[in-house]
Image 1 (cartoon, rainbow, N blue to C red):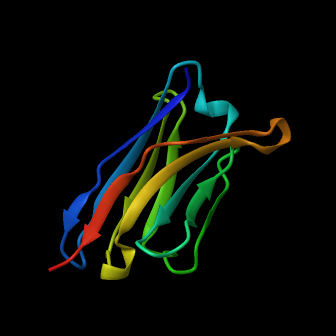
Image 2: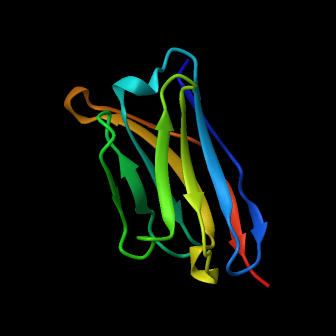
Amino acid sequence: QVQLVESGGGLVQPGGSLRLSCAASGTMFISSYDMGWYRQAPGKQRELVAAITRGGSSNYADSVKGRFTISRDNAKNTVYLQMNSLKPEDTAVYHCNANIISFNLNYWGQGTQVTVSS
């Protein structure tokens, strides 16, 4: 059974930092997948925050460029999202995604809550 498990969320003050982790288990080896972090705030649609390809190329939403960094450690079967200079508008549930578009494979984690508030 394929499973993605996020961790690292929590409550942080504006300007603070968090590092999210997404660990894959079961028969999934993330080295074969493009990976991404999405977020969904209350009353809003899920949006892409950052993505990293199998080859290591990354892209970011304009709202997080320069503040967030996505990385992957294939040996640990884990993807990370380092979030710095957090703002209240970053408050959301953050979900990990793994996909191979050409094989129509798409997996989601359950999400981890990030709340930025003083």
